[in-house]
Image (cartoon, rainbow, N blue to C red; front, side, top):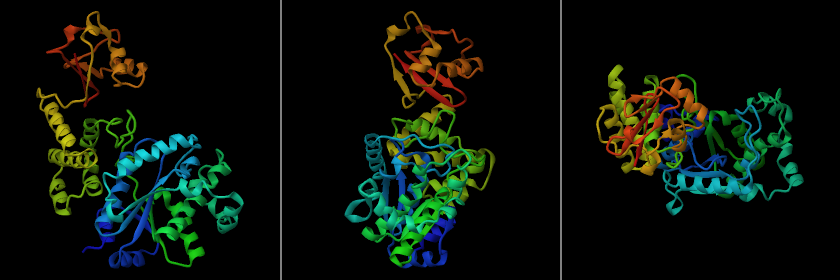
Length: 407
């Protein structure tokens, strides 16, 4: 069977590796237990996390054992990597709730049966540590001078870095040590912004256990324009369908920049290399088919075939100006609401198509809102029954976002 290291390398995941040749050899000859950590800062994973899930799935398919570590303990501090300010401190109840939601989502992608993967929460060991004992065993192995050279800390020095956050690297490093001692974990994976944290754990295990362990980072999911994928003007693209509908999830991927299509097909799907190359060998309009395949494949993995089929059907209907709108995001409202009319800005806000009413007014003034194909000209527009066709009103926001009102 092909070495998973070669698969990850060929598909463009790998950024940095400790002892590359050693790790490649190890992955080719035995089953390796590895882990990735997910801090529970929200109640859903995001499209950005999906790349990490793909790496774990590739590894598991190749016979290696994933540990999905939920950061119930580390979330109480917050990773300073890539942050210009200290994270909002969450309560234990909120963190526990978020951690449970993560467990539900990860279980869709990884096989946890018969010990093929495990899920752990670092709150189970970090919150029981005694400060003096921890600093005597762990703190003595970390140089403050060296830590301050790492970007995750160096970039924060001018604005201020609390000792609270400074301890994050020690806690994440201790996670690796704990997982090595209790689960024989030999490899930590993470995004490229985690390199310094991973090096901290890798060195700690080697010092205290005198054994060989490894670290590997992969590219962050960014677009050709340099932005993090999954971040939009509207907000984050979530894996929870209650936060981002399957249709909106599909449409986001369907609107991928031409320059990113091949890259995302390699990173976010399991399509074979030959198929990806065939889909993307020609540019221009032919890339639309590749974008459709990308959106469908990822939506199917995240939300299931039924939701992916519905999103595909709705998108094709819209692009073709068809009338099959049953699968478009919609809100059912009482018909009597529109007897005397409802202000368009209030309507957009009530159905959560805008975050603030000032956003709605701005969109209308810029010509960005249409009702059943007719552009709204005034922020004072009253939506009445006369605007509906067959008890349906199609609202278009911007170029490609749709929402239907049904009465």
